[in-house]
Every structure is written in structure tokens, then in C-alpha cells.
Image (tube, rainbow, N blue to C red; front, side):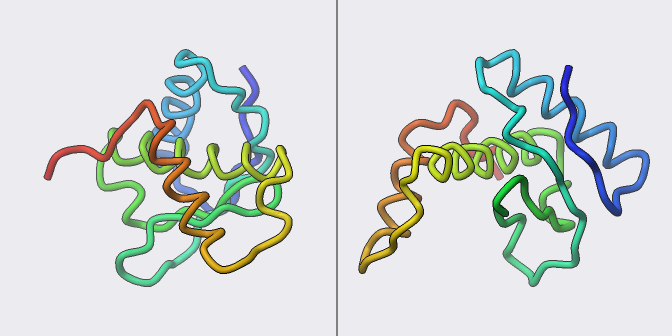
Length: 113
């Protein structure tokens, strides 16, 4: 199993990430698009943000294993969009269109509150 470079995570978070990557892989996703995941302090309400070759993850991404899988899937879907060239040029509405497309194709919806 390919795991990305993990930067700034504690041991428990690394374990959660590896389980999340395994879960996404077993669901048919190409998780090799994640080259690096970085732990950052994000503003309240922000769990993650995709980068060119991975994502940054904040505290809220680790609320539960289910939330983390949901967040990793969303960032992976955005990386897939980038790999397809869908995020190179932005016009009015492009970001919303990409978000809606990711939501339509996801296999792991947000956990119930």
C-alpha cells in the first residue's frame, strides 16, 4: 500500500490517515494521487484543502474516523479533477461546479451529526 508523506501529525492521526487511505483504496480509488498530507491549524469550519499533490488537514478532519474518510475522499476527488485538467482555468461558477461534481460522485457522505 502506498502512503503519502505525512507532515506534522501525531501517531494517532497517522494511524487514522492510514486506515482512511486503506478504506479509500478498497473502495476503488487511486490513492497514489496523495503524495503529501500536511497537518495545519485551519480556521473553524475548515477541515482540509487540496494542494497540487496532496492536502492540508486541520483538527476538524479528525473528529472521527468517518469524518476523516469523508474529508480524504473529498480532497482526493479534487486531486482527480486537477489531474483531469478540470481545475486549470476558473470562470464564474467553476469552483461551485467542481464541488457539486465531487459531491455527486462521492462514496462516503458526511457522517450524521
